[in-house]
Length: 614
Image (cartoon, rainbow, N blue to C red):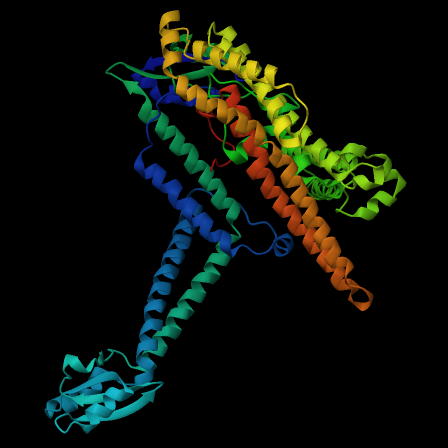
């Protein structure tokens, strides 16, 4: 459920600005409207801490080593600031030394073929009017230079197909010679500088390894800095004149009484009103139920949130996503592995949260789907186990020959099931939109009803075209025609338009509606991906099973490795398919039918956070 919001204006005397901000922060229910940025120095501190903490994460000891180390005391105040300065200096020194080391490496690589030579070595020769220049030339060019009596060149060294030479005087450009500029430091000096740089880097690394053990102190400092940034932003946002200071924002309707009580206690003046109908900056606060809340981790991962005036489809999203997940993984044994892994994680960490409960639900659903299709690691031999065979629905069996069902009948059944799920989900989307628009007295609900009729008609057409199911085409054509007319006539209606204006708007979009009708047919057809991806996963399983079975005798261990690695890869690919296909069907096809665009602004009340929000 999307919680209703109220627009709230808070006013206090200018002299009590800090008290007002402190009180609102403690209350923690006001989402500030049009928040301004915090003071630069405050945000810069948080940014620096974030960057430094990310750098230190590279130097954390492994988990086993961390367990054997005693916890470091939390550093705060001046003690932390001093330590922070030292660590920041170590990071900067390390970065500077690494850059210097890179330059030295390049210089050593350039100089090494020429030996330990510097510009100082040639000062004496220059004093005696011997002006030497050094070049790298192809062997053929050197031969020409050596034969040229006008050129005085000295052969120094052969390097692959090139020759290092010294020349008295410069060589003309036509020889294509690459001149060598003498270094300020010789090879020995460069090697010594390189060693010094590496020693400095190693020392900095040791400092950072020790600093990484104080990660809790850095995380605590980051939290303080982030809360200071939020407070500074609220302070900057607050309007004021010579006498008063004020803030405006949104408060959930359920928290209005708590806000009023706090206002009375703190002596704030306030005004509360309903949000404007055209306000597009109202935040969305989703209130999940015990079951629908299981989808919250997926929402967070995908970064999606319905808009304030959009429909909340959390429960339906969870139900269909669970079904899609089970059909795409498609293997009961994979569900068992996910279940065992989740139980192991909970047993080890002693943590039960929404994510683990979601994994339990998804694993059970996968086990059920694997059971009714008879798919266990893709092994045909599983059907020789009476118990597993008794769980199978014959017309949906992965190995239909064990149930006297033809392969084509089984495939048609799974495809029909996929199309049926798609039609049901899209019809449900239309009904949700109809219900919402009726409550808003929006006559365009008739257009959504038209889409529902179109979905049913096009679903029947899909069955006829794809699996050859006998359908009387006249009702299908009539249904599509009636639906098209309803969408054209009522699609442009809205509460702020007269009937004539809405009719004119709908008729002007007649070509768009035609294209959308074709798109609707494509959307229903797209649910065949549930069948196709599930079958692909089964085929991959069977392939690895066949390869593994080919290793017998002493090579049975190799066969076992092929079996486990192959199925591990298949599970990973199935998870990717869930993201690509299972999520898409909910976020695009279903949501599009609901009229949901996921335009929500997260509800972020002004309060002290208990952990860093990234």
